[in-house]
Length: 133
Length: 404
Image 1 (cartoon, rainbow over the protein chains, first blue to last red):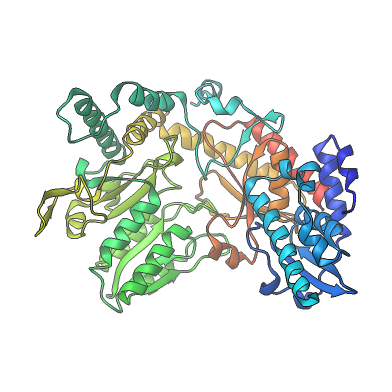
Image 2 (image 1 turned 135 degrees about the horizontal axis):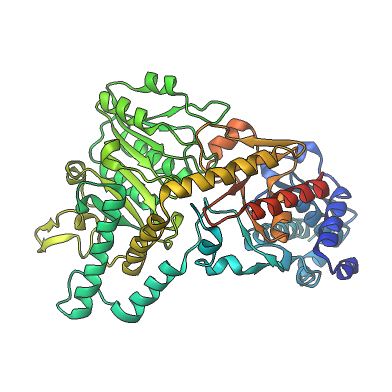
């Protein structure tokens, strides 16, 4: 899994949020044609769409949200999970969320959104793993 | 006159820190905070009186029953109901609405009509939809204007001889609009329809006189007026409540039980099955005492000053759009800044120790009407200060700078 060590340097919440907002702008955006209810993640206060494609046995994620901070959160997840083999995504543990201090900055309602995003990413991996078997 | 420093010292939670900063609590429309005077009553109940009511011959049960029934009378007097037994103690506004909806499922006929408004909370939409599905009645909706007020001309046109019930909130939770309930009640009565008013958002700011209003049913929750959660009241005119069947079966609500037939208890016990939230009801009474000691005229005047100050200050922020611009509104401001998502703005404000509500406020039809995903809602109470509003305005400004 890729390093997210940048996050450790942010003592100040504002820097952390500003970094997340910047990350959100770098998010590989989902094609408009996939921005449908089928690709919406439930459990978020804002709208979140995630799509995945398998290329050379690796999963590529694209996503979008109508909220900027949420976009930053998905961007982090996609940095971690994109360009990985489905098996690696399935086996990945998600402790990094605690480690980079994301969870402590997310209220339970928002954390539910985060959990739903990870669940959706893993669901895609399950589907692609089945295809590969 | 409000002595806000003295009042604030009654609320222990107001001195806590959130994210390292002094809490600014502007989510009062979701729930109000609780003063020591009310907290102490709950502690006293469990320390001195705790027992089951209405049944025990022993001293504790008698004292607890007395305290519980005194609270009912306080609620009756506060709302100026004619009789104590017209006050049904519930778990809150939602239960009160469901109790009436359930009762009318036996009294409505197919093609009867019910009227609600376009600015209702989901809890005053869904039970009536369920009632319509059960009975074959139709649900009609009073449309809203762009200022966030009800189109009263349209209401007049919706009323007809088939209209049986009208359900309106006294104050909109998402917009703060105070609805013209006197006119609504009078027009509905002229058409022989009954009216239920959802007072959850009104009661923290307005002291309704139920007999003067001549309203048929009125519901509210204690936790919006400095009382505990999980307690509320349903007022109904005695002659109407008597027509409704019991809501839930159980202890307390019966007169005699045999396996052949059960006869039900009289009002209010017919609707109060099971052991109630005794401490909560007694604390509800204490909360009304607390607010009446301050005085609802003083509360309304002070909150209106807070509202005007906050509205004027917010409007200086670029891209500010306030939803709900009724002339007559409570201390609630629903807004968005430019294209910023309310969730983003609320998250930044939270980091600054400022509690607001974001989202659709359980009133999705209102958000659809304005074609927005939701709003940020700041709602003020008599224990809030002008300095807190300054911090909030600075917070919105800072967040807008970060997010735009």
